[in-house]
Amino acid sequence: MHNVITEITEKLRERSQPTRARYLERIEKAAGSGPSRKRLSCGNLAHGFAACSETDKDGLTGEQKPNVAIVTSYNDMLSAHQPYEDTPKLIRKAVRDAGGVAQVAGGVPAMCDGVTQGQSGMELSLFSRDVIAMSTAVSLSHDMFDAMVCLGICDKIVPGLLMGALSFGHLPCIFIPSGPMTTGASNEEKHQVRQLYAEGKVGREELLKMESKSYHGPGTCTFYGTANSNQMLVEIMGLHLPGSSFVNPNTPLREALTIAAAQQVLNLTALGDDYRPIGKAIDERAIINGVIGLLATGGSTNHTMHLVAIAKAAGIQLEWDDFSDLSKVIPLMTRVYPNGSADINHFQAAGGMGFLMASLMDAGLLHTDILGVDKTPGLESYRTEPFLVGDKVEWREGPKKSLDTDVIRPASEPFSDDGGLKLLTGNVGRAIIKTSAVKPEHFIVEAPAVVFDDQNDLESAFKRGELEKDFVAVIRFQGPRANGMPELHKLTPVLGSLQSRGFKVALVTDGRMSGASGKVPAAIQVTPECVAGGPLAKVHNGDLIRLDAEKCTLELLVDEAVLANRIPVVPDLSSRQTGTGRELFGLFRANATDADQGASVLQLGEY
Ligand SMILES: O=C(O)[C@H](O)[C@@H](O)[C@H](O)[C@H](O)COP(=O)(O)O
Ligand code: SF4
Image 1 (spheres, rainbow, N blue to C red):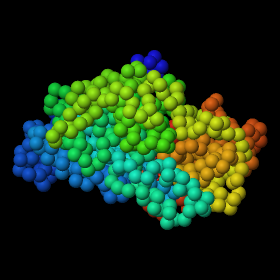
Image 2 (image 1 turned 90 degrees about the vertical axis):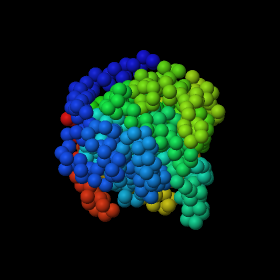
Image 3 (image 1 turned 90 degrees about the horizontal axis):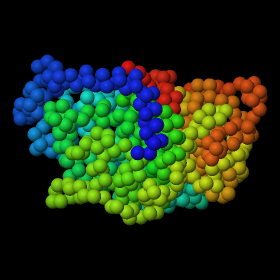
Image 4 (image 1 turned 30 degrees about the vertical axis):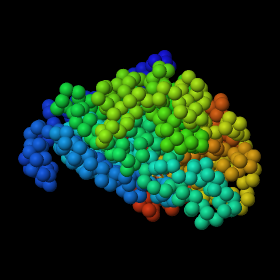
């Protein structure tokens, strides 16, 4: 094991000791003696299985049969979640065939960030993660269960499900993915037509045709954004069956993997002799593995908040310095859009998670002794990949060599020696930048600021021809407490178009970007945010800003005394606080923590 990884893990363990100890005590207590439903009254139990078959009622009386909670995020809005419609039926039958009972404990809401991108709905998106965590807890609070399976894929849903599941950390848990959409029009083609549309060179009809060729069917969008980063994280933290992440939906192998996961979780309950509660499965080593996977694959910057929140839910205090310290020793091993032109199906065909994890393990860059959920504890079996034999899954050794070194490379011959996720510091606060999708010639930008308080105003300035120059776009009042921290992904085609025409452009914001954002240098999640006294609220048009991703600095080149005398702008945010349900989220805006604390309202890990 690389000594830096050992050191960082040790530091994390020490930092987390008080909250982790309290958390483990809590799940010990919740585990109590035997299945939680033993503690229910006859009335509670009768209500809990009133609608079950007689066989299931018998099974749930006493502690005869393990009961699996299904927490589902099915809806028709996310192409990635639509395939879950009938999955509970498949799971119920699989669990019954294996001697258990399964009940849908509840559903959680799921927002498609692609549908809300650039719209006011996106201002609920980040908060929906915590709503999903709370909804997961509401589902599991029936306390009838010995295990759980979580059905979720996209951006806030997997983090929310995992945070909620960790509140029931005494139960074993397996995540069951739905799988990626088959490849349609490439992400590059889509991006090019978007830039042409932004430049007024193609119309809506042509743009919609291209978008629909790209997003054309059931399954997860094929770029390496937050959703596919989620799958990678869940697998590398050992909560999927090996090789589950990127098998396409509505295929026999996908169905067989769902059945195998539903039956495997029965082997992990406290009723058997291989009890693996999720609260122990997700320990400091698993969290560090998650950060390593994120860095090795150029994953979504959103996880510099979600992983922090997930860790806190398990009493673990992950910090941004851990990401940047690990980034120095974790190589970039994959190039999947926006970090390259390949998509997630190409990644899977080139070797997928089995090759990625085997190579990281061989290089001593992963904790291999975490619990995992496969038959054999630990991660060694995650070198394998699933095949269908008849209607059953068999796991075989994954490829020893990459099948496409333009898409995935071994840790020993990476695309770059560092993971491309960096922490910038300077006189406007701390910020995250993902350089894995930025060409090195764009790592340093020093230019005058052009300040906006709304991403749409930048787009209008672009259309008026006012931005044909070198500049740093400063988009303020986009933090969680201002307007729910929407993704500012709509800026990408405009800034990308200016960059490809030779202008030196960069973005600085207390907002966040999509996992699908990429090639323009962007210092995001600036903390403290503007409405919390962040210095970004004092930036004026024309101020010189220097973003240096080599030195990891973000400097406002204004005399300190001048800056000290400036009055921070106080915006009128009232128009951002109603409409599209935003009036229901005032509590969230008022109580969200900073981005580097996970931007959560749930006071995680404080109990
Ligand atoms: O973090 C992410 O990965 C994004 O939120 C992604 O889920 C979102 O859907 C993008 O908006 C899709 O990209 P386009 O908007 O470019 O289609
Ligand atoms: S990846 Fe994004 S756009 Fe695609 S289904 Fe998921 S949330 Fe929606």
